[in-house]
Length: 548
Image (cartoon, rainbow, N blue to C red):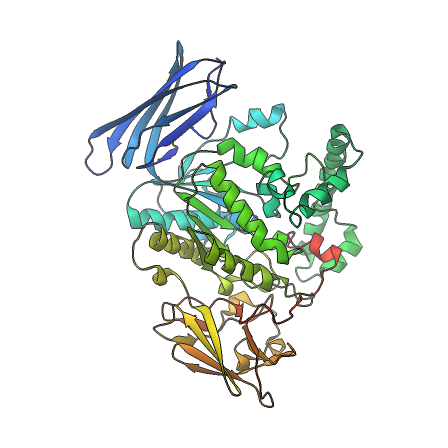
């Protein structure tokens, strides 16, 4: 049979309600393909139906089905002449794509709230995992055909994205319609992996991503690149096995000691056409396999793997959002993303590079339409780049979606305090905030987030605030909270010029708004002369392994 639907249109799939539904697949050139979607409305039980047709052009067809309402037990029939494809148990509801790197990929079975796996089965919450393969060969297409949507409670539920699950569960409870989450993520990936190379090549700054790749593969054939990467995969699998044995024997062993015992860690491997971290690689091998599946919006949790170029992240992230919206042919698609939380490995200095990533994320929210940042600064974990607590992250992202996308409640209900502006009154630097009308208060940090953290490195008296004069030299500030504003001073500083809060890769989080959400980190002026410390190549190489 020549007619094929894209793998994502499996039994149990969730299709977006009240929006054109785009079906796509492959067939013989010129084929007329017809589709009928029918089933029961969720609210009344009445039958509903949507029909459409299209021709195969360039080996591919697309069919737009008119919008229908939320529903269950739908059937899809796609025909072309004598060829027939049928799908069953389709739900009509809300569909979100969960993208990013390892903290979006982090599985439900491994999170602190894994007891959610014991909840009753539910067909109202479903998940599709875009297969994680970075090179298109025959095996790629064979394995893709085995991918399928799964209802909550199935054998694969434990592998679902924990953040995606908690987002979906909260959304389903709030809206009372089926919810589908499409997992499309890969640990350790730069945002440059999720857009085609040409998306950055035209920018004099961003093209460093493709220029670096081009230099790495110069003079190598595709066969040589594949062989190198295959050899690396074998080596790294053995390395990981030995490293895991080291940690099993001594959980507190230092990463440097592991390397002395096991040898060199070669992650992320040689750059080439098989490496998933290459620019554009996962856009081609993952995103393009599911676009333009009709969505309500995107969820995104990423940034860690671009911290070696933090000054470019705002531009890179903005370009990626634009690209995804272009790919889905909708400039208005909502984009809900997580701001990076606190993190630092205990033996590392504070590079302060994540400060710039967080600042860039905040600026994207301010400058790119239909985006909403979720502050999770208090959900980081000292000495672990993969925090185990994911429920608050997913639920906060859902709350942002409910208020900003669905119009349920006020937008400020889901957003913590944000810095607005500063004023200088003699020796005092007064800070003013948005979303702080109910006042600001302090809370003690959660001990579970900071095992082994030396609090002396960041004295509690300053609550994470620093103040500087025109010389840009920051000192711990004396802090006075006056309901919805904060006043900073420092003995001996007669003329303050700059202030900042939690300008650190990891520190205790003390300040929260009336709604219980944390104050997002900030500095009062980007002209303060700040430069992050340079990371060594070895530290950057191992940021995503979690094995330091």
